[in-house]
Length: 123
Image (cartoon, rainbow, N blue to C red; front, top):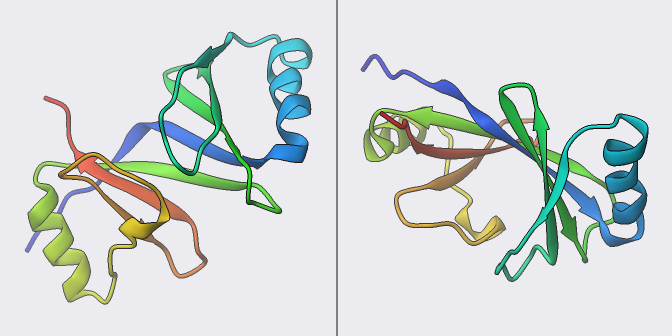
C-alpha cells in the first residue's frame, strides 16, 4: 500500500496553566505576532489562542493538568480509514483517549511520544 501523508497547517502547543499567560504574552508582545483568543469547548483544554505563523496556525492550548509543554502536529491523508489500517499494520495504534476529536480523525504518536492529529486532506 502506497500511503501518502501530508503535513497539515496546524500545530498545537499544549501549555501548562502556570506558564500559559507568559507564553501568550511572548507570542503577542515579544514576537509581535497576531494572537487571537478563540472560544473552545473541550474537556482537556481550558483556553486557546490562535497564532498566525506564515502559512501555519499555531494553537496555544492551556492545559490545566500538564506539568510541561508538548507540541502536537497535524497530518493530512486522502483516506483516514486506509491510513489508520496502514499505520496499525506497522505497529502504530491510535490513541484517541488523549483529547476529544471530531469523527473521522485520530491521534497517533511517534516512538518518542510526539502526538499527531490524523485527518482527511482538504480538497
